[in-house]
Length: 367
Image (cartoon, rainbow, N blue to C red; front, side):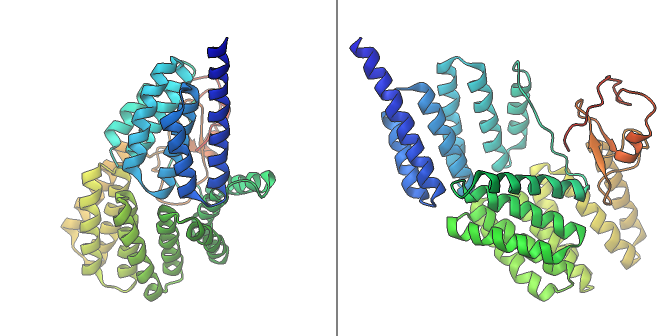
């Protein structure tokens, strides 16, 4: 009986210390929170408590841009999940392992771990598509911001910061530049308060994109440089590709086409190293515009062919009309089977099922 009570006491203490760490973390005392959670990890004999505190450590290190540490804790969490012998714990730990590898741009490993999750019974998966439906892209972060406000002041500002950042990106693409700047400024303010380096880099990139959209490239360039510096520091190679794409567009605005091609060459090297086909598709599209302007027909044809090869490989086309997706702002809709279409095409579909796989359910999914 004494052993049972000691076990229960250990569980209670673990829970209390985890909550203490969460309170410190939400109060912007990140290092103190990490020390509390590390003590729990070292001293707790409760596997479920250890699993939860590892999840906290994984999230915290992800938000700080410490992706190698994130991966280290994800590996430990896998072992803890196996000890618990619970498929839900195991699924969550594999997803964290996938997220960690994604941050480190180890995409083959990411896909492998995601497939492991898909093979586990009861797993729910959501699909995010990097197409161009800016109205829908704006809806979700706005909804997230509403939820954060509903939870009140005690809720972490980090979630508010991320939702504001994604709203800024969507507003910029819709051409609402003043709204984009307001959202990005609020996100950056919180990121600076929390020392959130990854988010600071994203906000600087967004600021630069906003100034570029205003044709103010002289203001944009220093912000791209600052973003690139942080992206390099934290190892965000995908972010570096986005920065180089933005700088390329600035050079194109200034008619400095050779400098634009130099930026594209650097971005292409990164994208090919990562296997980032979406980045390559965007680069081929920019090259097409540059070589068309320069009147270099052979290079132009090469990049047109490569662009369409990327579209085919990524299946970035509507399953009904066959037009490519991502070249312009379109309203898109995904179905539960993960096939996606132009919304207007789906609305004209005469059958109840998916036009591709003929599944009967046409309840909307999420893009």
